Image (cartoon, rainbow, N blue to C red; front, top):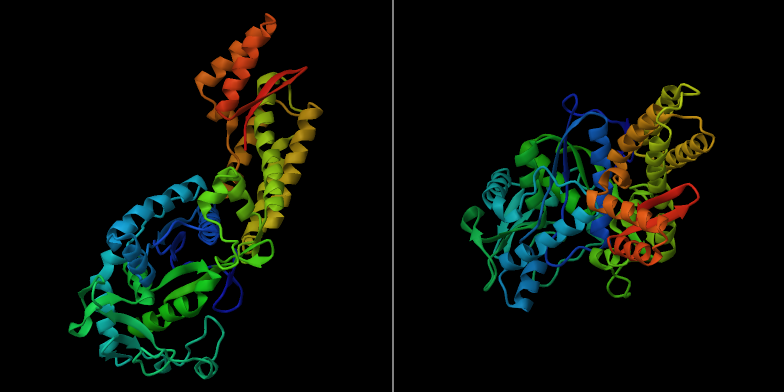
Length: 464
């Protein structure tokens, strides 16, 4: 398998530190407000990556943090007249609901920054002892000039960064590029006992270094996040972590692309800023997820209603195939096979892996899936498969969907109550009691079940 490593700026053959085991850290949200589309893009992108590693048989330890102490949190809490903890605890469940709706697997570990203050303090003290950090009246800073390869992740030279940087009037640091490891306490702000006897709170970069190294080790396999975090956040993490330990921090760096709205960068100032909740109010979560995974994770993604409608149509084709195969199984239990389907299915499986092994080339993988769906439809139309072969088809569709997370197993998900209603409606129609049949149809529609009547009988599907 090859993945694009931002650090080397090329695709590399992926080799984890330990065979069949992957340790992975992805930067999570700062919980001062509910999640927006950028958060959804990152969460779904790395969920797809994680799912594919699991599909390939790796044991994955997946860590995604929550930043619950930050300038934005302090400001928003003050505006609302509540504590920073109260604000964070009210926002965190909203992220969990949104990510759950998008079928994002929960992290194995979800550390809060405030739970790791002692680890952060110890790490800052280590950097002070090494002479790469210094104390001022407003905080403790990391001295970037002491790191020769600073800028290696974002491919920027230290001299060029320094020439374009400026120090804010109220900052006391030596260089504009030096970043805060610890911020001195200010009136009304949360504070902890800190390094060098300074009360205050941690800087942003030190939080992720402390949490990731504590949970995954000083060197781990993959660090991920949005492309906007590449500099300065991830660059800062590398500098402070590798200086502190003398070891490689993360071996592979993966970044997902930006979100654009109708070809413009999403921003509040342009009025094209959407929360996850606003989009989920208009579109089924599976449609949104399918839309987000259908563009390669490293590419920018344009979010528009037209493209969402296209995603909806595509997803309906996949789900209809699932439903139709189950229906076919019920009608063709005794039909003998006409060809060896296992060879065909193994070819699909291997081509799917080949596409995903190439830095998760999702466009090729999805094209293959739709080609497979077309073949399935032809096999069913021509009566070329039987019950057992249909079972193998369903098994492969489920296998693929363990990675994609969008094709719901409608026939299995249907409840006994709904089955009973469909049977009752069929009986009402046979007795020409169309009023009752229409009432049942309406009742099922309210449950999100759409009925389709044909000469061959009634079939159903869940609405998207």
